[in-house]
Image (cartoon, rainbow over all chains, first blue to last red; front, side):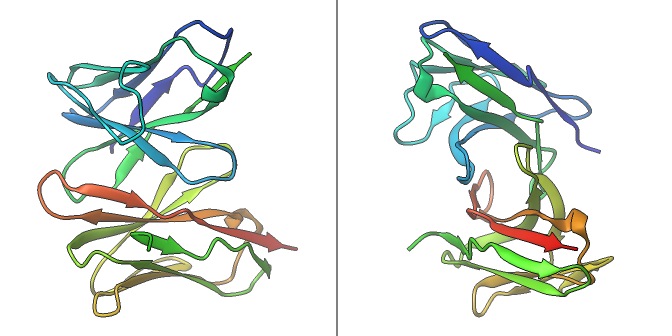
Length: 115
Length: 111
């Protein structure tokens, strides 16, 4: 199988604080992981590609200083939302692919609410 | 033009009906194709890959038409539990390639 674990599943934080979200591949090694954001009734939007041992690649319009990505090992990528604001409230999902041309496995998502 | 396009729906069908979704893609370098299912407020889950020869998994049949650049998903004998959003996913290019998600088609199956 290909299992991806994401934690936490839900977080409420105050405006101005930072939140860290973890994404782990449990039974395979993932040199690349992906972070998405999904607003209500909208499609998944790729935020960034997390590369083990190197810098993440961010999609256009995504602030790299605000969404810090660290991929320190072959099984763990973290996304830190820094100085969160209410407009950052969203559903954040990570995914990884066990091998090329294999389907993506998604984490269970993190629902972030910034108050 | 979007790289991957789907009819957003919603499709409202009665139980037992057959329903089909299409998804068109614009990049001829698209290599692999998938259908995902996403339930409300949950993560997407892989429903099935789409192979060139077409493939079936129980009540679900997926087909690929490279000439016309579309993939389809057919659901037979719809169940209430099939109600979800169905996402078309396309991998473009070789190597580390790019993945594009369709915006999804919403399906409601009613008793």
